[in-house]
Length: 342
Image (cartoon, rainbow, N blue to C red):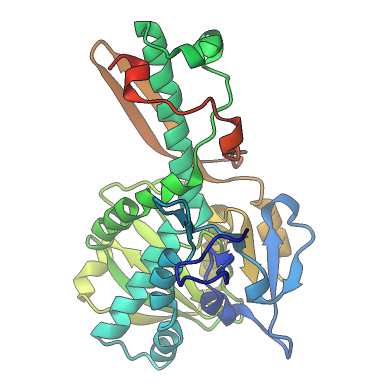
């Protein structure tokens, strides 16, 4: 029997894009309006594909309601409210005309493309897994591990733990607020690329880091100084930095004629890519493949103190984690506070 969608019919919004189709449309070319999509696990064989055929997962933003039915639309409607205005934003950028409404929609897209993507959601899932594992180890040491879990007592460092992915949706609001706080410290400019070398993009297109970190060893460092890049199209990119605040709240437009700078931005974009990179042509094959094995992932250290557990978390460039799929039928059964003698 089919579950009902939020509109009360058997019609479901099944295909949830984690990279906006209207955003990717800037990279299409030719009568077929296709782009080149590079899968990180097989970057040597890019797909020539339409934007609506890539960068999605079935029911990726769906939530289970209290009555057991599935809400496939709430997050899709939220994102759609931003995506609908994106063509208008791009038209304004091309004629270098920015008003308050355009800026609001521009920054809304940037925020969305930092927090809705698999790189962000998987990061939060990794944190939840770490917290669950650490908590179980503490309860084991206290002798309060539930009877259902005692057979794992000697393998809590290695036992498989799967997190219900829906839980990471609740972290998106916190991530949006945190990212918003970061952007308030930055000034912005629109880089107009006239070098003839396209900007590329990815499924994790918002990159920021400490500019004093030579080689960008640690991504998404939120230090006193921050550098941010977000490709808008093959010829436009948003650049943010603390030093740009002196130019005021409205981003200035700056022509970029230095081909080495464009390549540097593309290198950053390729490094921050998670599962997919995108380009209008095949001239970036080597660059994308060179950085396809690693992405920004969780970097964590747990510090145990007598009455406190401290989590020191951040990002590092490393191989992407293989997260376990949550399967309710394989769970140990419901656990409640009384199971932990709380």
